[in-house]
Amino acid sequence: MSRDHVVGVALDLVQAEGIDALTMRRLASELGLAVTAIYWHVGDKQALLDALAERIAAQVGDVEVRGDDPVTRIVSIGTALRQNLLEQPELVGLVHQQGHTAELFQPVRVALARELLAAGVDGDDAELASHVILSHTSGSVLNDVQIARAPVQQEALSRPIDRDELFDYSLTVLTKALIDR
Amino acid sequence: MSRDHVVGVALDLVQAEGIDALTMRRLASELGLAVTAIYWHVGDKQALLDALAERIAAQVGDVEVRGDDPVTRIVSIGTALRQNLLEQPELVGLVHQQGHTAELFQPVRVALARELLAAGVDGDDAELASHVILSHTSGSVLNDVQIARAPVQQEALSRPIDRDELFDYSLTVLTKALIDR
DNA sequence: ACCTGAACACCGTTCAAGT
DNA sequence: ACCTGAACACCGTTCAAGT
Image (tube, rainbow over all chains, first blue to last red; front, side, top):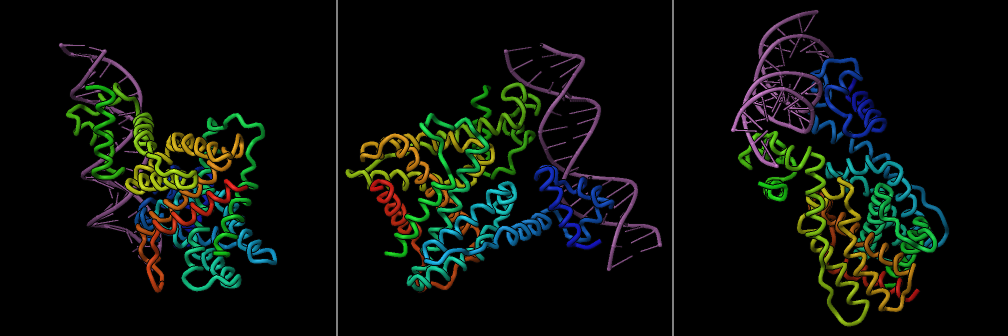
């Protein structure tokens, strides 16, 4: 029995039954302990949520870069991040609520800055461009998740929206503009 | 004593002390009623949160359109929405959590579509472009709020980021690209 | 129609006590 | 060092009962 193990079981519980299922008492019974033992290992519930957020952030943060030219590589980073975020929207919401979004985006931010530098954008401008690309990506995810949850919104279109394609297009346009500035 | 009044007092409470302060018991004492009276007027807590989300969405949804040319007008819509969202980030989070984001964005979506049509973008493409612009805007807000909450992230830049200006720039670029497609 | 009081099952947390 | 049990203050919700 260790802090890591307790946090791991908590993560399993959240993934299996959602954030509402995570109560100190429920977690204790899952661990085969008395409720109060958790307080010895990880501290109070706030500390537990922080630890969870940290784990999830590390999990979602690593992305693979593909392609040859800068634009393709940058768009591939955005696409990979978007995919990771879409896979576990509830967990991302948890991270955001705990205020750990910065940690979540940090590795991607670095990867983006590296590619932008390689593309000839330098210094502060690379920081700015990373910020814009990250905003665009997280916003796209946020909206897509929301639409998936509330399918009322589906309007009468001649053909349904391909959100993957639309994201690819908009991010490509944006990236080109940021590089050619 | 009416449903509207109960919801109004609940909204005041949330704005003054945050979402955690909104408990059925606290709200009852604020109203001068017994806890159970709330159940008669608005139903259970889920119903109360739904009603709150509806109000907030209507409040944040109305934006003023300014400017002459299409790009300026569209950017002004995005800017106004961003400003509204930034003013009450906690309430926006509440709306999102309740799954009412679609309602929140509906009026803006319509306004954007109208401007895009006027700019010569037609039918489905206007829908797609509205979606992209909305995503970009909400993502920008989401990131800015997060950074404001966790100021650790401030990196060593030669000059600090002007997020208003950056948003204006990126949305302008994006809008032009969407129109000229 | 509108409101109260008592009761139930559930929280997070503290603290003394055990080994 | 690690864990338990009892206790406290707080939740949301139901339901019978009052006017």
